[in-house]
Length: 131
Image 1 (spheres, rainbow, N blue to C red):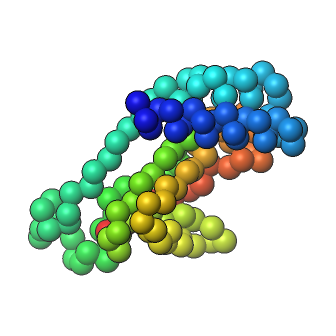
Image 2 (cartoon, rainbow, N blue to C red):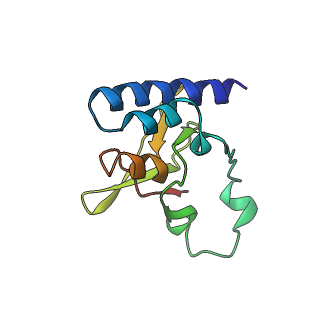
């Protein structure tokens, strides 16, 4: 319930700013702010430690991906990282850059739906999750 409330508050804020800056037309801003289809699906991931799930299947942990290159399909993705060295990497300027975890911080990615209704102004970032 708290994650849904957070997502709706973020969507409200993004919709307000995007409409003020004329990034979204009023109908799309209202749909996003109202928690339309893009906010209806939530997924929770817990990646198991590599030793538990990949022993003997990869040459080294440096080459393991928990999640391959992708964009997210909805409006927003909220990510809470732990304090481990693994985590999300964002593709920018032709290469992947690790997003360092900060205790208590959340990462918020725009999804494909948000990119679509903003006509590319609010992009859905290509990213992956690495050990």
